[in-house]
Length: 228
Length: 360
View 1 (cartoon, each protein chain N blue to C red):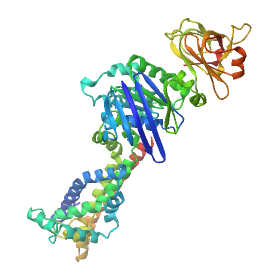
View 2 (cartoon, chains in turn green, blue; view 1 turned 90 degrees about the horizontal axis):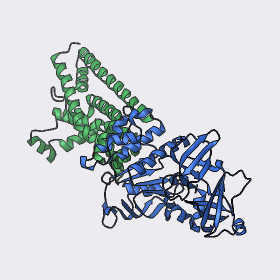
View 3 (tube, rainbow over the protein chains, first blue to last red; view 1 turned 180 degrees about the horizontal axis):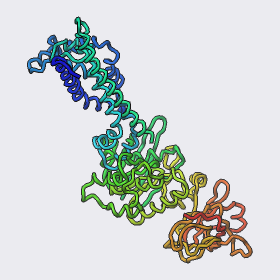
View 4 (cartoon, chains in turn purple, cyan; view 1 turned 90 degrees about the vertical axis):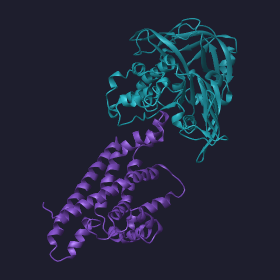
């Protein structure tokens, strides 16, 4: 399929934004999923609710809250800008928006996957001399791996498709925040943009279907593994 | 190895109060389900944290509620074997075996890989995946994995409960080998008293979250407060034997205990045990009759002469300990005791059928 330079820029930017958001949320997402699966502490329900909030809030609201928090209007935002790491209306903003919106999906998958791992196996290896980190790395994570990978795939795809929060926090700037969905929307608003829309739409569709398939296969493996 | 436990633990509505000390060898922790023996064992491993009290192992404080000390499970060097094996499904048998061994410094490894593989006959299983193992195989791997941690103490939580009788006997033979050849101190938890007695006669007796008594089974059996609990849960004589002869009619056995004065031949039921092999016979105290002299013209083929050590009344009879070279526990009606004039010091004969013997 032949794309114009402009369309290539859109695809490359989308990939970069989704990848950066994935890398940024992987460790905290897995850690939080583990905490929610294995630990009980006062205020757990508050953490749980806060993590899942972006799932139910209108994306525009999430984007606007992020703008208030990280934009030029806040001290933190101005500090980041001074460091050359400005968030609002940059590609970093697009990555932040993608990460925040996909984070609950990742945490949920990781949590479910870890809950399926028999905690008695973890107890057993503790008596064999494995500390908490080693127990996690050699027992919990490998056994939860298919579910964790499925979560990473789905949140990558979700990041790729982020629109509302991205538009609000990062705008529609070519090369900075004009990701696939933003571009599709923009082209659909212009006269004679149908061909561009169709090409980008096809890419979006393919990536999404592949991600869902991969996640489904990984989830099945997870179930088969915990059934034995 | 000296383990001293004196703890209280509350789990929901259940509360455990336990004071137990052991000094090497195998100590059985016996009690009906729900008596708190698993909680006690988990507190010893560090997987459960007691609320108050202390736990020390060879002078090292593992837990002290007042001082705020609780050594985490992975630093206690107390390895556990559970009822359900708990092998790691993503490792091979060899991987499971080496899991704990790899975490030790070379200087801490007292038990070698080859030694364990040989002792537990694991050679043919090493490359297998865990998924395809039978229950008995899995339990052997779990034992090996725990031993390879060179633990200071091995704790076993109902390790035979999920196995059928044939496999129980097989694993029991391995447990005896671990006890005798590796001299591994063990804390052995079970709700089956006769199973514990296959391995040790030193017991801690638990019921409803309390330790009712601790000591040798014959001493405990003389305590009127403990008798009924013991009798309800498989109080039995367990004697080490050597198979002298074996044919279609049955087996001829000799007692193998060091203290036996005579090597009297015993008639046992048919068995698959090979001639010359060591094992144990189990006989229910209720299946032993007493007589003042040898009885002729009777189908009971086993008649052992001994001297009465003690007589204690129980709810519905008397428990009599007779020294026949080894102490033998017999349960007889109180009327019979009076009629035969059985009391401490009196000579008596213990009679039982070949079929009353269970061989393992």
